[in-house]
Image (cartoon, rainbow, N blue to C red):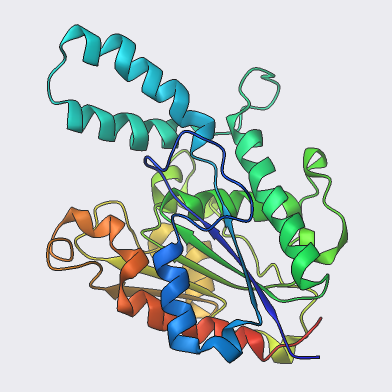
Length: 286
């Protein structure tokens, strides 16, 4: 049996659509998917099981209603900027965990989407298949939290088996990642990164680094991770985490903050992800 790898791709903040997406559909990552298929070749890429984690609709419909009822219909100006705030900053502000508040459900609804994709990937790729997670922007923070919750046995997730518990996760690629933005509630010494999740993978087969963080210096929403805390710095110093600066986006994007949306079709990003996938394919069933 040929080695396989499962890939879960999650989007970040911003407008992606206000309707729930079919779990088999590829939308926001279509450019990246096509690039990986072309770079790796059909014969190799057929061993890659690729699914998206789509969560934008959970918030977008209520955001759109507010914009229409309270801004557009009342003649508010700077609507493009207002929509950016609503579909970006509001996403980040809404995604938080508030224990004991039954009405604040966004954190759990988004994590339920992650779990659904993990369960589907397990079905189509197998229980012992190495997993690679690709996360844009806020998606990196979401996945870090999700993995943390899995590692600490959060009861509402009810994952079964090593794949759904992220114990076959071989690699993590974040791009335009803004995890540091959410860290300032704590002193640096109290901020700890997730430890390597792929505990079911034999040590000699583990990827180094297993976490690659890609950011453009012109992307105001993308940040290096190593300086977030002593814990993140230790992860980098041990070779497990690698921060890399790249030039993301096309001629209209790479030199300014619009580079935040340029990662999906950027060749530097494609090259790094291809390397991670090829290494993960060599691991085999775990």
